[in-house]
Length: 302
Image (cartoon, rainbow, N blue to C red; front, top):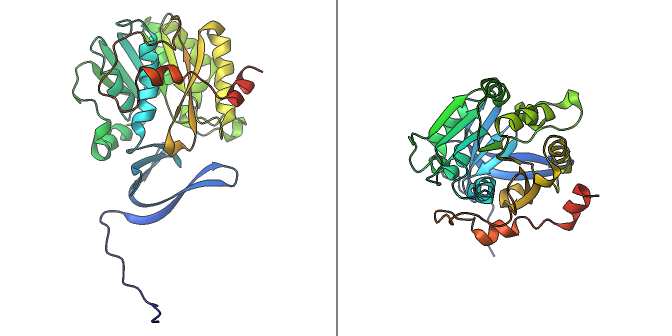
C-alpha cells in the first residue's frame, strides 16, 4: 500500500492571513479559532476582525469576543426586546444606548414604530465605521432612520451632561464590553465606569421612571461581574424593581446574564405586539428568560 508523504500547497483563501487565535476565558481556559485575520488595529482599544468558516465574521475588542455574525441576533434581541416588551406598549419613546456602536441594539429598538428617538453614544469612532464595512447586517433596516443619532463620546461624560441639562429617557441600554471588576490596578477596560454606583445614580436621574438594562457577562466564567452589578443595582434602585434574565449565546460558551431595573409590573409577561422580524425572540422565549439556574439564584439570593 502506497504511503502518501508529501501534500499539495493549500490554495490562497483571499484577504487576510490565516491564524490560530486564542481568547482567554478563564485561568487555563482558552477558546481557539482557526480563522483569517482581516482587520487589526490598536488605538484606545485593540480591535480585531476574524473570518471563521463556522462563526462567520467575529469582532474582538481587547482580545474579548463581542459577537459573531452567526449568532449576534440572540444577544441583541435579548438585550432589547425583553425590556421593551416589559413596559406597556408605546411607553418607551426615547432610548439612550451607552456603548452599542455596533448598531445591533439600535437595529432592534427601531423595529418599534412608536419609538421616537434613539441615541447611541460610543467612545470609539472606529466601531461604527467597521460595522458599516464588515458587518452591514447589524445596521438598522433604514441606516439613515431620522430617529437615530450617533454620538462619539464617553458615555459617562455624556450622561453627566444630560443630568445637568435635565434630559429624560424612557429606557437606557448599557451595551458595553465586559469590565475588569477586581483589583483597581488591573482595571483596563474603558467600560469600567459604566458598571459603577456613580454612573447608575446618574442614570436614575435621567431615567427616573423608565427601564435600565445592562449585560453582565457569562456567570459560569465571570461570576464577579453579575454579582458586582447586582449589588450596585440594589444600592441605586428599588430592590423590588430589579430583575435578572438570561440568554444562551453559543459563541459565548454559556448563558449570558442581563440585569434590568423595571418599574413596571410583571416584566416576565410581554405587554406589546409580537415582533415578526426576529430570529430568536418570541413571547415564549421572553417568559422563559426569567427562569434562572439554581446556582445563579444561590449566589444572587444567598
